[in-house]
Structures are given as structure tokens and as C-alpha cells.
Length: 571
Image 1 (tube, rainbow, N blue to C red):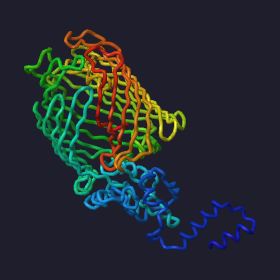
Image 2 (cartoon, one colour):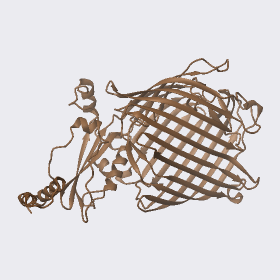
Image 3 (cartoon, rainbow, N blue to C red):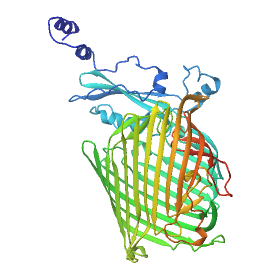
């Protein structure tokens, strides 16, 4: 059928709508052209692709036998030379020396290849996986139907600067921490991470090395290697696995080895009252299978884990330390995950595409560590977690999460190190640039050993008080914020936001504890204001917090103003 035939039919009395006419014209065009790659002008300018990448074209409806014909990659550099605000000598030099991510690295992340059946779900999931890479600011996949049974795909990514001298300084709750070194999260454009730093905080200082490969030799295997040499001991971590890289991955397996020798502290009123040496070793391996229905993913995992936690006195030990713990247990885990992702912005970041799962996420794990194998008390190991997000309306988002973990000591017939945690977050967007936010968080501990504390203060909550100011086996925290997401791009390097906040919280001991740990048990609150800087050219998954907090009616020993500078993963 030709276009003239379609038009003639409409004039002859057939009920052909404008939409049907356009669809028919598209089909006719496709039938009269070969199914080779067709170069067509992009619908969006480069500026729009950089800053409006969450506004996707609707994906074509899949038809029986429809396949992916061609895949084209468009890798946008860090700065856009066509934008006058970004066209300067410094930014052009950065673009010139930046190593663009190798095309094969992007291709290896995709869940589809040329010749595969066309599946919109795989397109959307591949896009999410690209956005999750530390070396990309954003990603978008365009799909265009070129003939009746084929589509062409364009993968658009925007690069980040990844080779960074690491010169960081942060202050929270009256305590300073710093780091100095170099890291690259996209080594030579291959998607690998290499980091060598010197870190120092109130507890320890030392050198740390990290190498991470999310796609070993272009495969789906991933690995991570860490080594730390600190003034209080050494640390190593080795992880090798074939993860559930996709919701449709049928199986997963892996192993890890972790060892850490360090000095730990116990707090009262924000001050260290005792220290002890802790040497922990954890080794584990697992195998998991997965099945999938329309939206639900069900995963069943089996594994074995061996733990050895040894505690020893040092000169700064002033309180009876915890007893050594050994566990060796097989475990089984069940995971139910609902695949219901949407794109949002101005929730955890500032004017950046965020992937939010509105589905249920439920995980349970159960293990048994017999005395004959662990050479310690027999214990039942249990763990459970639940996450859920939902929109009450187009402006209001609720997020819920809860977790339970701990042991049941069979010999003593009681729980041990049991912690029940829950949090509710409320987001209400009054318009595109402002929102209200509230957080309620509760932690309930039962029969915690001497190495466990639940604390509040500084970055753990109650920003107007020193770090770890209150401690106990219970805590409750309420935070309310008025948030601003300004449409201002500071130096073309940072998206800028701000917040005014109020915190009220309390940490306390429900049962009797060592007198040396009993500090301030009052309900505390503070107010404050803060600036938020979301990097847009590097470290895009972080938000820099610059806060000024003032405690309300504080004890005499508390400063009237606390200032905090921290780097977090959310607003």
C-alpha cells in the first residue's frame, strides 16, 4: 500500500484518524526502505540530551519477531563546547585530556545485542545499569523502529571526570577527618576503579588501596580487592562473584574473605571512655537461583559463613571487654523483589535522573552455627529486611524500611545482639524546586554485647551535638527539613540546593549497663541550616553537606554552634 492509497482511502469515506495515518505512513516508509542503518537527525539537541535525559521518547511496542538491528553509541564528553557557559579554555582542556569510556565497556553492560529479540524491559533495565556506573553522569537509550520487524538503538551516555586527586576534609560533631591520595573510577576508560589514599579520623589513620573490576575481562564477573595498613592494624577484603546483574539473571555465586585488626571505642557524652582491640575474620561462599513472573523476582540462596571475632585489652581499656565470638554456619536465604522502577528527580540528588523502585523488597536469611563446628556456643543466626516506596499522590512519596538481625544463643536460651530497626521517610514536593522532608528512625537493641552501641550525634543524627554524644541500646530520631533545589549551576560544576532542618532524638539504655557508659539520657533537639552541593562533573552520586546546627537548651559542655562538612549519598 502506498501513501497515496492511504490518503485516497481516507477521502473515500474510511474512518482513518490522524494517528492511524501517521502510523500507516511509517509502516509504508519502512516497507519501501531497506532495513539498513538509517541516519536521521536527533530529535533533541545535545544540550537537551545532557540536561533532560529523563524525558524519554515512548519505546516502540514490541511485535512478534521484532529484533534489534543496529546499536549506535553516542558518548558525550564532560563539558559541552556548544554551550557558551561551558566553552572555555579550562573545560576544553579537561575534555581533551579525558579518556572517554571505551565503547566495548558500555556494550558489555547492555542486556541486549544486535540480532536479539526486541524487549522494552531490557532497554529500560540496561539504561538503569548504565546510570548506576560511577563514571557516567546519566544515560539514555533511544529506540527507533526502522521497518516492521526491526528497531535501531542509540545508547547515549554522558561522561564524568574520574581521575581525581583526593584531598578531602570533613567535620561532624566536633570531630575532623581527612584523606589525601589519588583515585580513578574509570581507569584508562575501561570502567575499573583504582584508589590509593591516606585517611585520618578520630579513631585511626593509615593507607588504603582499592581495586574494583565490575566486568572482569568483559564478562559479568566482578571483583574487589582492598588492603589497609592503619596505625591500629591491617585490613583486607577480597570479593569475587557472578552477581544477579539483571532481574532476569537465572543464578549467582560468589565468595569473599575479610579480615580487620583495629582499635574500637566506646562513647559517653561524645567522649571516648574505653578502647579495645578487635580482630575480625569473615569468610563466606554462596550459590543462588532466581525465577521470575510478570513483576516479581524470587531468589533462593544457599551459603556457608565462618566468623571469628577476638577482643583483647589495650592500655586504654577501662571497661570489661566483650567475649570472643566464633560462628561457622550454613545458611539459606529467600529474597522477593518486585520490579517496578520509575524515573524521578529532586529526591536524593539535585536535578539528576534517579531510579526509584516502587516495588516490594523482602529478604530473609536463617543459619545455624553448631557448637561442634564453631567451637563456641551454638547459635541460630537470623536476618530479615523489608523495603517499600509508594506515591500517595503526584507530589507525595513515602519510603518504608525495616530490618531485624541477631542471634539466638541456644546454650543460654536467649537472644544476643538483636537489633530491630525501622525508618519512615516522607517527601512532599510543593513545586519543582522546593519540598518538605521528614524522617522517623527507631533502633531497638536487646542483649547487646560489650562491643555494640547505638549512638546519636553528629552524622548519626542530632546534627547540633558532638559525634556519638548519646549512646545506649535504644534510639529514636525525628528530622524535619525544608529543602530547596535551585536551578543554579555553580561554576558549571555543582548543582546547588539548601535545607533548613530541625532534629529531635534520644538514645538510652533500656536495661542496666556499665556505669561508665551512662551519660546524658535527655531528649535533645536542634535547629540548623545547610548548603547542598551535588557535583555534576565528578562524583555525581554524592552530595556535599555544609551544615550549621544550633542545639536547643544544651548542657553546659556543648558548644552553642556545631558546623559540619560531610559527603553523603543523598540530599
